[in-house]
Length: 116
Image 1 (cartoon, helix red, strand yellow):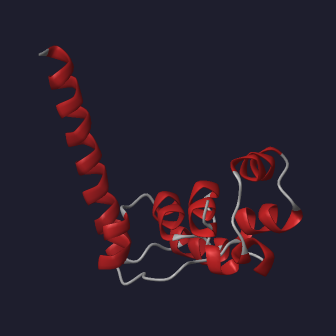
Image 2 (spheres, one colour):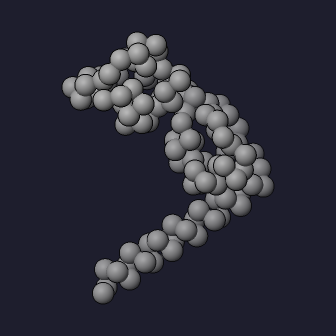
Image 3 (cartoon, one colour):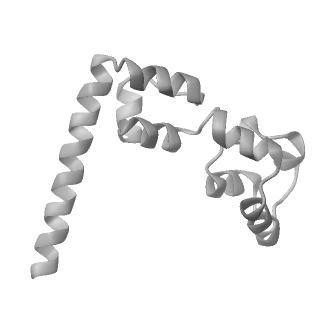
């Protein structure tokens, strides 16, 4: 598979990976091995980032669209995410509320569909 696909499956930011990871294809076996026993660079990248937008959105409790509306278009480090969580700006508080409402509505629709 392409390095971008492997990075997405691993939940890491491709530009922050080592050149040898970005340079070639990754087999499913290699991907499974990376997940099973991650090398130091992968452990460090998962711990400290920079993290891709889906990971940033998840850690902040907002959607990826919410990040964009808040002006976050690039990868963030764990330190930057923690700073936002410690002192959330107005946009983050608003987007969290929107995200919670969306999740609640999705749950309501799932329950309704299960009854029908």
